Image (spheres, rainbow, N blue to C red):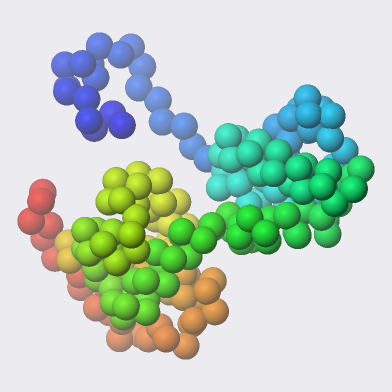
Length: 191
């Protein structure tokens, strides 16, 4: 992370770039190439499904393609079609947005144990058994990009979109949204 480097060291780099997430069409092209290298036959719909569930990351798209390919091989299928693709991704517990069981566990813990938040990072780590650094560096960025959680001065808060995705929209209220907006306006003691 660039923020972990001292300013003089960071200034020595000629160009600082930030890579954006890949679009599904770009990931589908990566799947074409990887399927060719792996000598895997895959239907067009299955390519798009894997691309959608890969969090916009080529490394993840290749990992998912390999796992789905393994599943197809074990199932005696010569072709990765939609049923095989969906079965494999369901077994891996990768949902339609690319969330895995740990992402879901984090969201459900905040919702069910802390009434949707706010909850501090250390408390969330202790509650889920996940490392603080893993939550912050591995899981949280994607949840933030999806708009499923917000960081407030008081801690992490689950947003309406996450409730809807998890089928828990009845537990989200307009009063809660007003509270979240107020928490976002409070000054951060760490700044």
